[in-house]
Amino acid sequence: MALFNFPAWTATHLTIAITSVAIALIARRTIFVTKPKSLSKSIPSPRETLLPFLTPSQVSALPYPPDVLPGARDVDSPYGVMRCYEWGPEEGRKVFLIHGDTTPAPMLGPIAEKLVEGGCRVLVLDLWGRGYSDTPTGLPHDVRLFSSQILIALVSSPLSWTGASAGGFSIIGFSLGGGITMSFVARFPYLICSIILLAPSGIIRSLPSGYGSIFFRYPSIVPSSYLRRLVGTILGTKLGMMPQTRTEDRESTGHEAESQLPGNSALAAKQTIDVSSIIQWQFDNHWGFLRSFVSTSRYGPVWHQQSDWKKVCEIINGRQKNGSGYRSYNQQNSKILFIFGDSDEIVIGKEIIEDFEQMLGGSEKVEFKVVAGNHGFPILSSQEVVRHIFEFWEAERCLNKEL
Image (cartoon, rainbow, N blue to C red; front, side):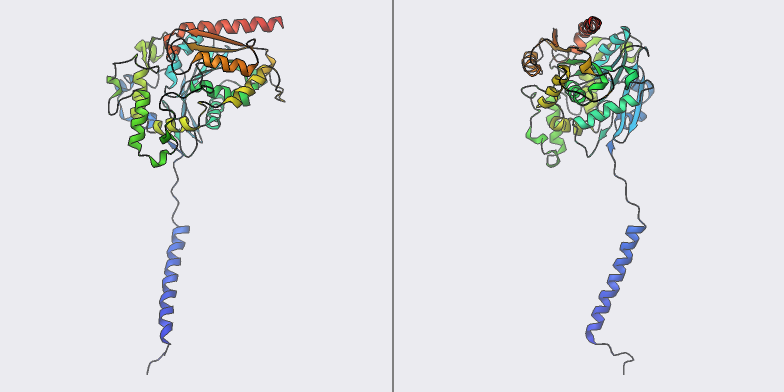
């Protein structure tokens, strides 16, 4: 006779109970003992993935050496680490420069150097996903992200760039940097004392070839190898090719240019800046560039930014009040300066002039200049560009004295 005579169904329930307890114990251990893995918030730039593995001589021979411009600093932030360059006399006019979509800071190196020679204090950065700046993940590369980057760069300076005592700073935007500039000014006009746009994006009537690809809308379902090939075609880069060997066809696209650069920087020591090689190097070595480029093409201020541009026009015309005690752009009674390349096929100056004058309600408070060159004119005609900038500032100064 059995000591315990359980019904047949009880054994089944006992098995279920034991299994449930085991699962609960395993779950408890998983929840309370195992530490969750932290998710990466950014894709590191070549500063972390390439430079530590090169010799000093190899670093100096890069198309974009890390000491390419004076005053380099790496700024940590919740979005990742970004590269800034700041130099020039501390008491000089403060000028913030923003480069384009495909080219990092060296693209504006010749202009920045000449501005410093004229007594300015300049600040140039690598936009997210370009040059030596990381690529933030999980965030669209839109005006919010880029505006935050500008503000982070400003507060990282040892000098005061903001506040009533600073008196405002001048901002120069090239290509995509022009679109970023206008969106930034639309929201922070009290920080700005002068706006200069070099072949700006933002209100272009049509996208450059390839930028409107449907594959950029759904990058998660498109093989990365295909996206890389597509972006490489847009930029004129070559797959699997070392950037140092790319010397041919430098004049084939608007992205490419070569120029003499005076001063004491690494670019001055090399005497030339080869933008095509820098683009190829970035394409080959920045693990996050592809993601940043695609996200910027989809979400960035490349076109359809009429709303922000109209807001800036209202500020220029004095019709928008900012409610701040700071010295603001609409109190300067100033003009805005545009400079275009006469053979630029990416940003058509005539179209921008027509559309902006219509937004502004006339041409009284805007000045347009045209220089020789394609979309690479900031390097090809840097001397002429800087001459127009200084003449523009001098005219502003005289106008303010009269007022």
